[in-house]
Length: 228
Ligand SMILES: C[S@@+](CC[C@H](N)C(=O)[O-])C[C@H]1O[C@@H](n2cnc3c(N)ncnc32)[C@H](O)[C@@H]1O
Image 1 (tube, rainbow, N blue to C red):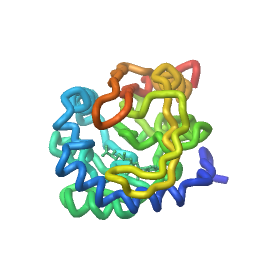
Image 2 (cartoon, rainbow, N blue to C red):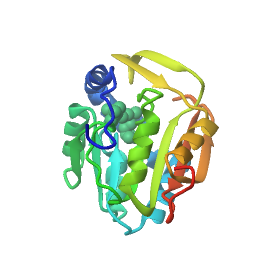
Image 3 (spheres, rainbow, N blue to C red):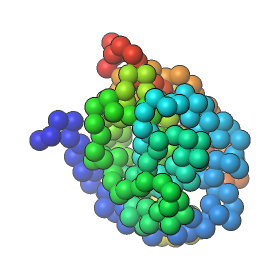
């Protein structure tokens, strides 16, 4: 077994097929409603801007679960050395079509190749909520190890206590996945247990498009945290 190997989550193939099915509608929603477009959401944009400012030119950035690459392309425009990966091949086809100037690949957060201390930044931007509860801490630990000391992590996810079985999404497309909601303090705790130091937290109340959310930003300490 490889060091830091994470077992394939039992529902990974079903989740991939579901995102393949919704990918085109998702892109249509981004284009027509601004859904998922940080430029249309000042607080999400501010979070990504703070992340970009913090990372600067400290090293490559990986957008894990990049979907159609909206944020990846925004960070590239800001001058970051960024690439994106996603579980869904159809999402990546869309990302490559929409943002041919960027680098994208197909991979799961659970098995994407990550070299130790190689990244200036890593994102899990609304893309880690399908990971089973026992898998997320291991993925966070892999991200933490992949960051250079001082490197930055940002994530956004859905807030709550439930495991919501979704049967349709993004304009009524049939899907089969579970949205694992997290309470902000639980998520921050997991981030710390992974060896990262939280630096900011932004809570977002429910709005007409989606339920409550949270953004957490953290960095890998220059010296390892005693909790890691
Ligand atoms: C709500 S979309 C967000 C996409 C993008 N980050 C954005 O903000 O537009 C969730 C994305 O996470 C991806 N995803 C779900 N599980 C994943 C996993 N295990 N590894 C990588 N990507 C995953 C999906 O394929 C989908 O593209």
